[in-house]
Length: 161
Image 1 (tube, rainbow, N blue to C red):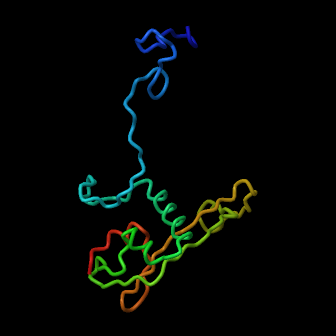
Image 2: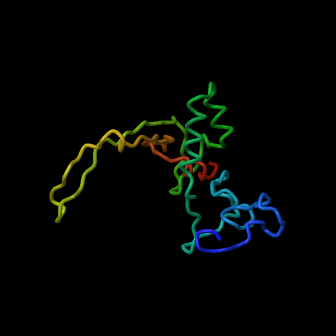
């Protein structure tokens, strides 16, 4: 008897040490990791609106990119290995050239709550345990007139010019 129910912990093997599988008394197949490593794959499923949407774990890929980029001794080669295009074409047809990689450290130290009606708000500094820190990655391209800030997934999706 186990917490009000009875079942076999042996998985048919006769030994209670033979329990394998994920979860409690389940012989499920191992699940594939949810993190993706190849953004914008041509065989990726399309959403109902006919577009490929960003993967949910892009933040993990960007975090790994930032970590590696900050440690590399050769930024140009790192970008080539990561398949970041140095030149590309924007959706509006503008030719883009890569100028720089910006990595920004951000710490949220306060919060605001709008009052009813939205005309005013309440500000509260956050206690130390609630301060959040993160890094932002931007790839800065020039379109001939002005800089354009792209995220990693946007830059990787640029068609060749």
